[in-house]
Length: 339
Image (cartoon, rainbow, N blue to C red):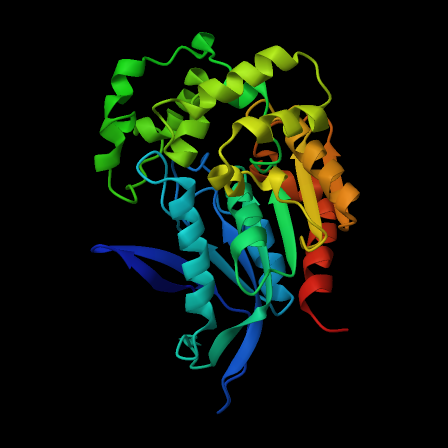
């Protein structure tokens, strides 16, 4: 399959890339504008790139349907913040929408992207990117697909309560932690199992400080202020707790939390989650579904019993989950392809 490697922006001298996978196209003299699924990789927002943990099942089905599949890099925590990631998403949409952004296949077919017909998708931390695209991309995506996506509910012990039992040696990560982290490069080389970045998102969970790195609110710690609300709220209803959290989070940071920005204009959404996921808890997708239901947004949630994080990468995933993959593909086709 022809893959077109593209730089969609630079941060200083560092290129930020995306890979473009076109469907089969006949060669003619016209340049077509095609619908696209824009995918954001997982890695807890801290590690990975456009070719890691790649959803081959999704790419294959999307391009077979005549839709372009795009897998994009974005800047990583802790050197970047969620605001930098938002800028990358907005810049990617702007790049795809430019008149001179034209791609060419190996066979010589030329095409661009119809930015009025883009669906966004993401796995794990990339699900958070898909949610941010739903809020900030222009034009607004036609649909959102989240695979065990982070960001459906940040107001939980998973993100806010320290967990020393996770056992990571904090001193090993000094370069990634406040105040040293600001000198990190905007992207990092990905070396599976040989980089501290592989466990950096888990370290943020261990310390209970992920929100500080999202927002650059370290002194005083925004995570600590939110933790005090969590402690005093006890077993409060998640919607009641969300309202309480909104009061303590500075208004300029409300935009970092998708759950505080759900309205009827949110795109139709498909949520896919393992019911025993211990990294991104399924309560995140459940909470987001509750918010979308309340806003009148079409939403579908499938929880796969007995499955944890990243279950769709299993060797036998096609056999086990092929029917789900087909349903997800039909959701994307309905959003992007005219009848």
